[in-house]
Image (cartoon, rainbow over all chains, first blue to last red; front, side, top):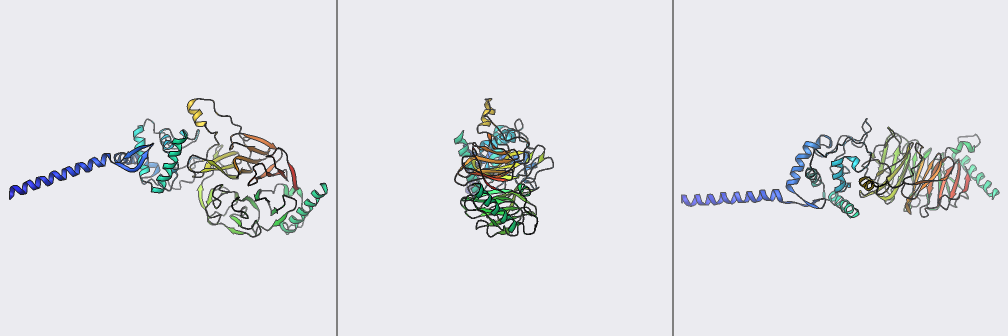
Length: 161
Length: 308
C-alpha cells in the first residue's frame, strides 16, 4: 500500500511538473491573440518585457497606468505639450505601427520635422526589439475598438509605402 | 447696372439701419461697417454676411434681408455644412455660439461647457456634419459632436513664432492625415498651421512626400506658403474639392489647389472674410476693402455684390 501510494504521488508530481512546464512554455512563446506589430505576431513574453521596459523608461512621463501627464491637452509654460496618455483616452492608437516605432526611436521630429517635444529619442537607449516590446505592451492594453482602428491605420500605412 | 447697384445698396443700408442699428441713431457710414464684416458663409446658394448683424441673400446678392441673430450681439464666425441646409452656427463676441436651423431666422444661444470668452472661429467637420470645432479666444480648440449644443476641450492653441496663437480661422479639410481622419487647418495672426482631427499635434502644412525626400536626400517638393507674418482672417476648403483652399489676409484673397502647399494671390485689398460655394469650388465670395465681391471662376474675375 505504502509503495503504491509513493508511486501514485510520484506520478502526480511528475504530471504537475509537466503541466507547469507546458504552461511556462505556452507563457513564453504563446502569441498574444490577434496582436501584431509591423505584421509580426506578438508573444506574451514580449508584452511582459515591454511592460517592464515601459515602467523603467516611459512611465515617469506617460504614467504608470498609461494615463499621461495631468491636464495633458494644455500646453506647458515652456511652450511644449505634456506627455499624452497611451490608453484609449489618448491619440496613440491613431498612429500606425511604423509611426509609433519612429517616434519612439527618433523622437517626434522623426515624423513631424522640426517639432519641439520633451519626448527623447530612444535610439541608443533601447534596442529595436525593446522598442517593439514596449509598443506591443501598450497595444495589448487597448480595448478591441482601438486595436481594430489602429490595425487599419497600420494596414493603410503599409499599403501606402 | 449702376442704378440697380445703388438700389441694392439703399436696401442694404435700410436693412442694416432698421434692424441692426436701432440703438445707433447716427447715419450708417460705409467706412464704419468696413471692418465689421467678420464672416461669410454659403447656406446652399444663399449668402450670409455677419458682422454687427446678420444679412442673408437668397438671390445671389441682388437683395438682402437682415436676420436678427437672436440677441446674440456681434458674430465673429459662421459655419454651415452642405448636408445640413438651413443650419447656421455662429461664434459670438460675447461668448458661446448661436445655432439656427432655419437659415438664420430663429436662433438658439448655447454655451454647453464653453468658457465665457469670445468664440472667434467655427468649422463644421467636412465628413461629419454634426461635428463642430470652435476656437475660444485665448483658450484653444473645442469640439462638439451634437451640432454645437455641448462642447469639450480638445487642443491647446498652436505654438508659432515663440508664442501661443489663437486659431482665428478654422477649416475642416477632407484630406486624409494617415491617422484615420482628416485635417483641421487653422489661420493664426502669424500664419497657417494644421492639426489632425485626432488632435495629436499642431504642425506645418507639408507637401506630400516631404518625409521621403528628407530621408532620401532628394530635392524637397516645391512650396509657396502664404506671406509670412500676416494674420489669416478666414480659411475655406471647397466641400466639393477639398484640396482647393481660400484664405483672406490683409494682402488680399489667396488660393491653394493642393491642400495648402502652394498658394497664389487672387485679389488685392484688405480681405476680412471668404467663403466657397458647397458644390462649385470656383464660386467664392469675399469681403474686400469693405465691399462684397464674388467670383465664379476661382478668383480670376470678380464682380461687386454690394457695398456694405
